[in-house]
Image (cartoon, rainbow, N blue to C red; front, side, top):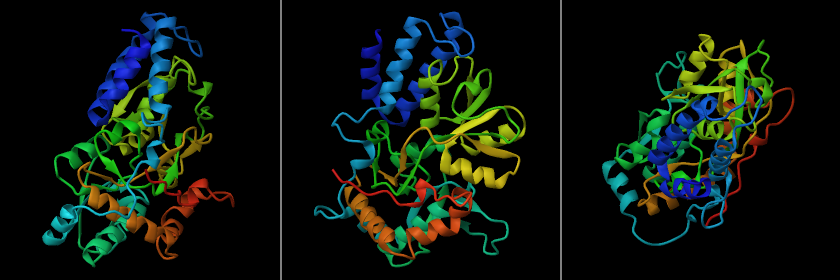
Length: 345
């Protein structure tokens, strides 16, 4: 099958299932490159491998089929129609939210928290959504969801929504609905402070790099291997949960981690032996994910986001409390310190 046709089919699959299949097929192809014409470290692949990798890269970076960027395709807060999904949550009396319980400053359990409650930037947002729907910020049930199961949990009705550093992508929009973006970040490299790795560049030659299943980091690594990063970069270490990569880095099982810069900054704050290497090399936007059929809930969340961002005690206060200490370094204000502007379809 030629590369353009394959790229077209890959874009048509969409969703977490497609991402898993694409990652698996592409990763298998990458691992076979030394047998199919790849050169050594820093080299380029043979013509067939190059065409496939470029096709995958195009599939992950272009606009969606309708010509819009993925983060600009949510529903406006205003709009009529059924309110059945919001009404069901009100009748139940609780909002169920899929979150991370191990991401420092995003969603985690602080051992010093006497109440044993989850806290972090994503947790604050979930509480605000619960307040706007139910009139009580504490009427929310949190469920720990690994990176690889975020979409499954939504589609199977395990949660009403996922608030878990989840990047809005064209493929994922085929499987779930997203709110307007609530945070902007980008992929970044995390490695030991004394490592010779300098960023997402030729310094990754021969290095073992970890990423999470179905993550945008993995898709980027697969697409860029042999092009933006050396062909000798070992990207075979793929884990279900993003934090597992940090553990493998600490144990010396990998040399680097590629993940969202916002998460990497928090991990660097947890462990003084690791550091961010180089700047971010993609633009990514987090959104609240819900079922595609939950249009009324999407509009409700977008109303909450508009109010939350405008409220001085909302988005900015949460950022200052949780993320400013890790992201605004050396007196410099991070680009992530400003909430992204919403553009609705």
